Image 1 (cartoon, rainbow over the protein chains, first blue to last red):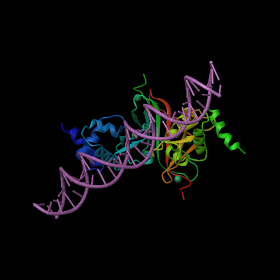
Image 2 (tube, rainbow over the protein chains, first blue to last red):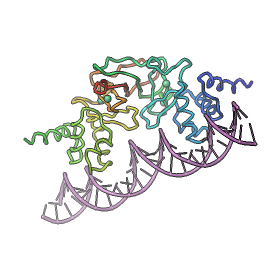
Image 3 (cartoon, rainbow over the protein chains, first blue to last red):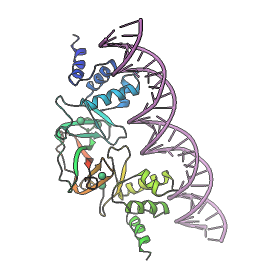
Image 4 (cartoon, rainbow over the protein chains, first blue to last red):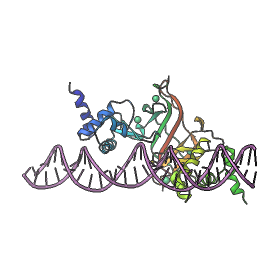
Length: 140
Length: 140
DNA sequence: CTTGATTTTGCAACACTGTTGCATCACATT
DNA sequence: AATGTGATGCAACAGTGTTGCAAAATCAAG
Ligand SMILES: [Mn+2]
Ligand SMILES: [Mn+2]
Ligand SMILES: [Zn+2]
Ligand SMILES: [Zn+2]
């Protein structure tokens, strides 16, 4: 019955994050959505919680490989939960999809970012691959 | 001898853009660089020209397929000239490279953005693929 | 050329996002 | 209880992009 409340704490502890009230709220918010969220989105849902506190919680999550950030060109960075065993390495990177209509961003976790043959002496460390168009929901 | 001054105007006219003084200056600035530029970079080089005027010139260029914009995650959008026959279609899209050291962004025009097998009902219209790492110049 | 319409530019102000500094609070340890 | 560490709230700030409006330049007739 209280298993719903125990689970988020477990997730945080598994990543060595101290489960403070705000961090739990932020994590629960992220868990409640199927798409990536802006700081502002979380702020709206968690009415009364400071932007800065959410910001620092997210930054903490990022440092501990619990969330990854997506730059979808909308102006605001979006955040989404990583998969269980994600360590945010190159192999963990996946393609994202930004819908121009609903403006939501989805993780296409099944689509790994392809490796490219770079010019000589270029070293790859990370990547951001966002496909833009119309999502299934908005595609009548 | 004045062929240097005629050329930028020709480029603009070829794209049906009226070659006003500011537009010529902005285009010349873009032509003088090998990497993509922020609005702020152009503003610094064209000292005395208003940010807004550069902004509107760039937007005009974009609309007429003379420049394309790149979202490299640095916080500021970057702009680079399109290739001659570019119409900013899906096939014209290419990969970009952002160097974490010099913070410059390069067009890898030889690397076309690969097409991905999207989930059903998803329609692709555009894409932004940025690889991040260390560029040849900064790679000792 | 003169007039009037259209476009371009300069200037100011604004909105949004992300970020930092600092004081306060909660909590754990001694 | 005293103390130290970390979390949070509050305020202020910087960077970027964008819009409104008036002045200036350009263009198109008459
Ligand atoms: Mn994702
Ligand atoms: Mn490019
Ligand atoms: Zn959609
Ligand atoms: Zn570099």
